[in-house]
Amino acid sequence: MSVKINGTMTLADVVKEYPQTIPYLNELHLDYCCGGHSPISTTVRENNLDEAELLGKLNELAEKAPQNKNSAEDIERFEKLSVNEMLDDLEETHHVTDRRLMKDAEDSLNKILIAHYPHHGEMLTELHHKFALLKADLEEHFAKEERYTFPIMRANPEPDAEQVQLVKDLEDEHTAAGDVIKEIQELTENFTLPADACPTFAHTYAVLQDLFNDIFIHIFKENSVTFPEYYEKASNAGACSVR
Ligand SMILES: [Fe+2]
Ligand SMILES: [Fe+2]
Image 1 (cartoon, protein in one colour):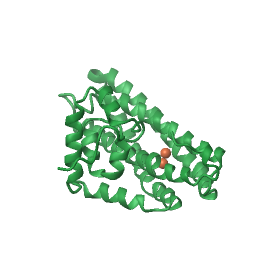
Image 2 (cartoon, helix red, strand yellow):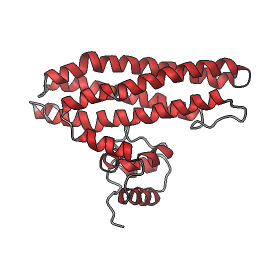
Image 3 (cartoon, protein in one colour):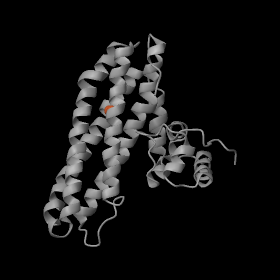
Image 4 (spheres, protein in one colour):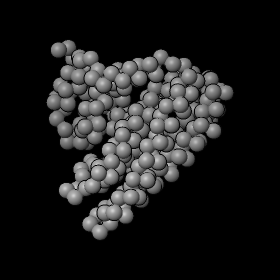
């Protein structure tokens, strides 16, 4: 097996090249989108993981054909688009999917909050509250992208420093959303169902997981594909060094 992935690469680089690694990274709850810009060696230290084992597994997956062909093909397809086409695509795919999943999760979460309040009231209240915060943040973020920042990007294919900063503000909002997602993962012990969970409880957790997995790909595409390509086109190169 030839080694392709090493400790100096970031998880965002890995996913860009080998999207088939996404399910494995999700399993380990490793962030490849919002905070995926540290070298793997640093990420490994922070998460108390074995670097050799992680790199071994990532390289093994990199050798294989993608298992989940759909998401790997989707990312490959996305990377070939122009910046403007990417912006249209993000709005037509992830913005629609994430809004639908958030609505479903909100309804189900309210149902289980009522039904399971006697035994799980404390945890479900906290979950309900954190999710409401995340949903509000993301709805406002999507509206800002669709009605403000993306139109500015389309109208200014060679951005100045101010326009670059507007896009960087979106990255900060992604980080904030990623932090709330991590809190929800911790609170639910990575969506471990209690013994007395009903089918609606299971459905709620499944929808939240689907939602988060889609958000991770959504943010990865924006932070690691679309925005860097846009920054590269900046008319004043000195004003746009990517963080
Ligand atoms: Fe977006
Ligand atoms: Fe975004």
